[in-house]
Length: 388
Ligand SMILES: *[C@@H]1O[C@H](CO)[C@@H](O)[C@H](O)[C@H]1NC(C)=O
Ligand SMILES: *[C@@H]1O[C@H](CO)[C@@H](O)[C@H](O)[C@H]1NC(C)=O
Ligand SMILES: *[C@@H]1O[C@H](CO)[C@@H](O)[C@H](O)[C@H]1NC(C)=O
Ligand SMILES: *[C@@H]1O[C@H](CO)[C@@H](O)[C@H](O)[C@H]1NC(C)=O
Ligand SMILES: *[C@@H]1O[C@H](CO)[C@@H](O)[C@H](O)[C@H]1NC(C)=O
Ligand SMILES: *[C@@H]1O[C@H](CO)[C@@H](O)[C@H](O)[C@H]1NC(C)=O
Ligand SMILES: *[C@@H]1O[C@H](CO)[C@@H](O)[C@H](O)[C@H]1NC(C)=O
Ligand SMILES: *[C@@H]1O[C@H](CO)[C@@H](O)[C@H](O)[C@H]1NC(C)=O
Image (cartoon, rainbow, N blue to C red; front, side, top):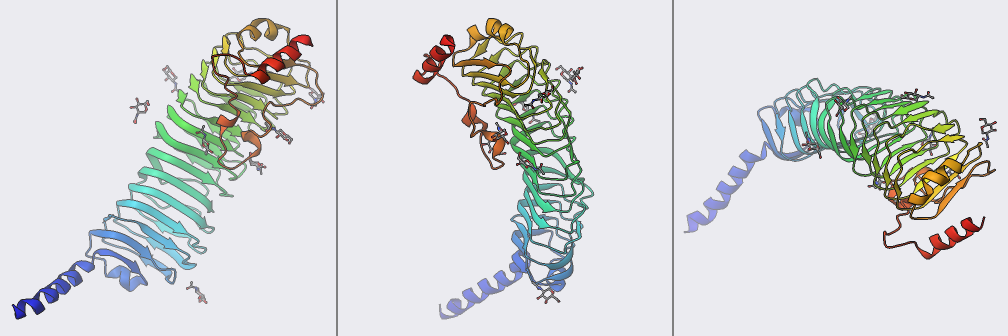
């Protein structure tokens, strides 16, 4: 008995020591990284200390069951892991101000990518390409493209404040199941999702081109704010949640030839060059509000049969409201307003999505009026307008 008492803990310790090699741990220097050479799998989180400097190369490891993280290692210039294929939790790099090379030749799968404040990182050397990621967030890097992020599926996809990012082509993705958001990258950024068919919620800000040729449906918001393109077309889009097109100063032509249903609000505001909205030939139903303001002179909504919320159209241009009053007004459940030649066109909801670059919601402007009838305010509005 007495022997066992001493033996057991000793064995346990020996066992732990042997296993500890490939357990989660913190790498303080290249020597620690070399110590992992025989580990195919790291069981747990692998952290890289903020005190490492120069090159860290993790060879041999093929899989990490936890996170791979490195924060604040300002002197690490290169990080590589030649055989690492899978990181089952987050891959998080933050505040690596001199990191210029990130070389993960075999990496294909991560639970999430979160790269922030990597001001020297101009490219990702992900030779095989990451095809699966639950979410991707890339912010404040020096990346010029996202080659190496070759997603087939993704949840949230947030790309912001990358001042040299001019090209994003996510050509394998067909469904985006989370929030897709681009903002404040290089003003020449061209975003291409050639095969994307379904999305949940997408916002595009400050881009020079957004190409969504295959997009059929968004469940939630699709919003375009402060972009620099002159044309936008979504040739295959049939259904959206809120649809918002605000502050695109060069935009002259929008085209939604297949769009039938907006399950939410449809807002067009502050696009100073947009003179007409004539290419929504099939739009039938808007379950929220329609809110168009600007300096346009031509609006055609030939098939619009139902607007459940308010209808607000105000233009400083020579807009003739008669056809709209005749064809659309009878199908509007909320307040109906249509005004041409006004000095200062007013949107219905000044606190809407456009002015707020944070995670604001298009739902706030949906202005949905329950089918049971008009609200008192809407009634008053309707009475006043009828009197005018
Ligand atoms: C980075 O290197 C500089 C110069 O060698 C040193 O002074 C500084 O302490 C290092 N920083 C870290 C976080 O190791
Ligand atoms: C994409 O979404 C559609 C509709 O929600 C679904 O039918 C399809 O299976 C999804 N495709 C993939 C590859 O997940
Ligand atoms: C647009 O939709 C049609 C019909 O569903 C399809 O045949 C066509 O390939 C789609 N176009 C693109 C670019 O996905
Ligand atoms: C980018 O877009 C945001 C939100 O729409 C806007 O506030 C900001 O002024 C834009 N930035 C530039 C440089 O256009
Ligand atoms: C607007 O764009 C659509 C599709 O891209 C095109 O068919 C149409 O001719 C354009 N209209 C104008 C006025 O440029
Ligand atoms: C509206 O556009 C016309 C030209 O189409 C221009 O003359 C006028 O100044 C614009 N008005 C405003 C308020 O921008
Ligand atoms: C339109 O622009 C004006 C002036 O910049 C701003 O006050 C207003 O909030 C904008 N409206 C929308 C819906 O973006
Ligand atoms: C859409 O995503 C944005 C973040 O990109 C979020 O702020 C907003 O609430 C979402 N809208 C809806 C209707 O889910």
